[in-house]
Each structure stands twice: as structure tokens, then as C-alpha cells.
Image 1 (cartoon, one colour):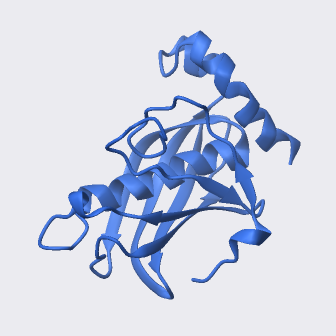
Image 2 (image 1 turned 120 degrees about the vertical axis):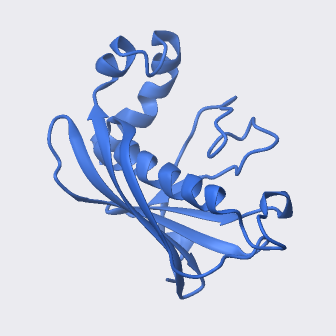
Length: 169
């Protein structure tokens, strides 16, 4: 799948974020950033050699992490809610080599209710579909995420502009 990044709107993450998937402040993480066309979420990623499993093949856990991250952020960026993984099924189609330019794509599938949503994630190397996932995510408003202990109230205050951006689109 080929996507022109110049046609996409960036989703701005928090400064100081240390998440393994999306945190620029995590020296060992994937440093995923996100862009949207309003219907899907995109991340352009190159997995470093330190995240290999066999030889130069990206470890399956890293692949699953990228898929989980794009699906969770799809709930955030496309629905304006906090998304927490309930279930996730990964299908590995083709091996992915480290230091390869990848496109990770997320989309809301169906089943959008007040409390849960089905999400799709895919990883492409050029036109080749390498891995895909389907997940069911708990989707909750910010106050519920704080009440359930998903995020602290002070952290949520910093995160609200990201959620509000989705609700303006």
C-alpha cells in the first residue's frame, strides 16, 4: 500500500511520552508517529536491528506491538476516546526485515458502541501485506479512563487536546 504522507494530517502526541510504541521519550521504543486522512490512521516506521528475532527478521512481539499501537491510536484519533485492548488476533503473512520502511495502517471496522469498537491494523512493506490484526477495544471517555485507573487525572489533562482534535474532525 502506497500512501503520500504529504496528504495526511499529523496527530500530535504528548511531549515526554515514554510509551514503548509511540513515545519519543523512550530511548528503546519504536517512536511511532501518526497521521490521518480522516478515515484511517497511518504510521511510517522503520524497525531497528535491535528488535530482530531470527537473524534480521522483526520479532513477532514487535509486529504485534505495532498493530496494537495503531489500533489503539485509531480509537483515540478517529473516535476521540481512550482505547484499551480487550482482544487481538494477529495473522503473520510475510516475514518483515529490520531496517525496512513500513507502513502501519489502522481503521475502525464496525461495532462502534459506547463501550467497545472493532479495529483493523495492517503492516505493509511497499505493496506487500506482511501482517494484519483485528482487535476489540474498550472505548471510553476520558473521565471513565481516569476513574478506572487507565490514566491519572493530571496525565489525562495533558492528553485531552489529542482527544478533542478527533472530535473536531
